[in-house]
Image (cartoon, rainbow, N blue to C red):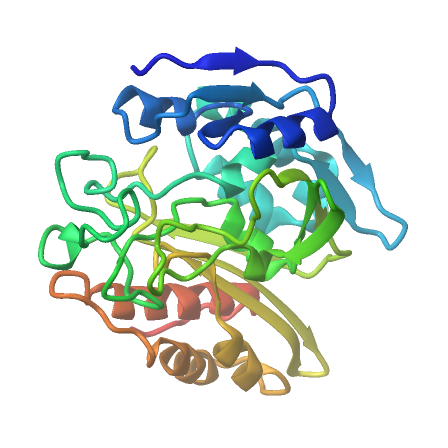
Amino acid sequence: MKPFRYEQPADVTSAITMMRDEPHAAYLAGGTNLVDLMKVEVATPDVLIDIRTLTSKQIEDLPDGGLRIGAAVSNSEIAADRRVRRNYSMLSQAILAGASYQLRNWATAGGNLLQRTRCSYFQDVEMPCNKREPGTGCSALQGHHRDLAIIGHSPSCVATFPSDMAVPLAALNAVVRVQGLDGERMIPLTDFHRLPEDTPDRDNVLERGELITAIDLPAFSAPSAYRKVRDRASYAFALVSVAASLEIADGVIKDVRIALGGMAHKPWRAWEAERMLRSLAPTVDHFQVAAEAELAQAQPLRDNGFKVPLARNVIVRMLSDLANITEVGQ
């Protein structure tokens, strides 16, 4: 591992200033992703700035009935919180589907949103990768891409964003609170991560030095669930995951939320499917048509076309379960 300097700034402002002044520095919170990347020299910071004690470790009630999750709250604490389990069940389920107990105990809310792709070419310094080294090419396009993107990718990158937690956060209209030297700004989770386009090395919209301080969840209490399809039952990243909620009133769909994981360079909010379903009766046929409309924009690669029907079936099955429809054909 490349030698590095370790710093423990006294406060958030000091950390941001240090990051701005050190061109090859990195923030360190739980380190569950960063340290792994340092071991294989994908990440080679000169300075690690420890920020775990600088942001909140609390989950607080908001005046509007929502919750504020401090950036330093562990994934395990989020999943176990009674308010999260009661009102945001898809979030608790997603975290529990994500990683081992040990990782969940150490990984933080803020760090979860900043983890890097698990594309094998990104993690192999001997292979060309535009995300790791811009301009070198994307090895996955013609290589192994079975588990990579089918929506929103580009000729520059077909990697997927690996977080389970971020998928329900997208469905919940979560807002990421970010602190920089110019003050605080609030970024909707659906706008926080970027599609690759021509700059796949930029995973998100953070400016240099900006630090995540909290995640705000608006008030929410509709029935919701998270489902993850993967190659093995434990500790595997999603081939396809779906976070969904469904609110029915007077026999029609009053509100619906759908977000997809394992499909794109960011958590994918299914805006088109949601738009089509509102004010319709909750039927399997309507769920099927909406899912197919959302997935019509998919551009699968040579070996991952199976994700299209897989995602469609999971969307239909989940919405049917939330609507208490017991018979669902394929």
